Image (cartoon, rainbow, N blue to C red):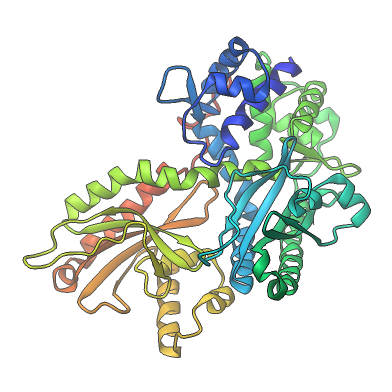
Length: 484
C-alpha cells in the first residue's frame, strides 16, 4: 500500500502547496498535475477528505485544502514561526528588498515565507510559489550538489531582470532544510548586494540556532521492547501515515518513539516513512536517526491565511460591528505597514463618517492595529523597525501599548494622530500560535469612552472567534484524530 500513500501525498501536495490552497481545484487538474488516472485520483481525494486533509470544493468533483492539513502545517511551523518572521522582516527592512524563505520539494523549491519590498518597482515573491528555474540562486542553494560542494556558501544569480542572493539553512545532518534569500531588481543590485549577503548570512545563523536547539529537545529514543504493536486492528495506510505526520508535528522523534506514538508496528512505520521521505514530506537524519517534517509543509497555512481571514472572518467582523454599533476591521502586517483586509463601517453619529481603509497601507506607528501586530517581534526588533522620524515620546508610547496588549490581551487607546478617535485592539493568532492579524473596533471617542468594558470584551471575543476560524488551538476538527 506504499504506492497508494505516495499517490495520496502527491495529491495532497498538489492542492495544499498552491499560492491559495483554499481555492477549489478540479480532480481532473489534480490528475494532470500528478500524472495519474482521474478515477484513481477521485478515490484518493475522497479518502483524503475523510481524513480531513482535503475538503470538498464549491463545484462537484473539486477539492481544496482541509482543516487537518492546515492544523498540521501550523503545528509543525510553530517552533520556527517567530524566528522566521523576524529574520524575513529584518532582511526586508535592512535591504529594502524582498525577503524569501523557501523549502525543498520533489518538484523544486517552494516559497514558504516572504516579506515583499515596499518599493513600487520590486522583485516579487509569494508563499506557495514554486521555484524551478535552474539559474535561480534559491534553487541552487537548496540543491544537494551545492550543500555538498559549497558547504552552505552564499549563491548569487540573475534571473531575468532580478538578482537573487541565497544561502541554505542547514539541518544537523548538513543538507538544506530551507533557503533564505533576497530578490532585488538589477538596477538596484550594485548598492544592494553587499547588504543582502550580510543579511542572509545573519538570518541563516539565527534560524539554525533555533533548529539546533529544537533537535536537542527531541523525544528520547524508546527501546524496541517498549514499542509494542497496538491492540486495535491496524489503520489503513493513509490513515496510519497521518498518525505519524501528526506525531512528528510536535517535533523530531526517533523512529521507535514515533512508531509507538502513532500506534504503528516498527516495520510498518519504516516502510511508510521511506515513502514519506521519497514524497518530500519527511526527512530522516542519518546517524542520529531523528525523523522530522519537511519545511515545505509550513507554507500551507501561511498561503491560506489571507483568504481565510477574509472569507471566514468577514461574518464575525460584521456581526461584531452590528452588535456594538461601531466600525470593525481586521488588519495584517505587510512589511512595516498595516493593511486592512476586512472592513465593516457603521453609522457612528449624526454628521460623522469613517473613511474607508480597505486595502490601504498605514504606517505601523499610526495604525490602530499596530501594537497588536508588533507582538510578533521582540522589543529590540520593534525598536529597529520603527521609522527613523519617530521621536522618543512616540516610540515610548508605542512600546507601552505593545506591552499593555501583551499583558492584558486587549487595549483601548485614543489614536496617535487622529484626535477624537478611539480604537480597541486585540491580536489574532493562527494555527502556529503566531500573531498574524489584529482585530480593531474604531469610533468617536466621546461615544466609546463610556463603553470601555463592553467594547474591550467585544474586540477580545471577535479576535478569539477569528483566531479559532483560522486554526488557533486546533488539532483535529471534532477532537480526536479521525483515522480509527
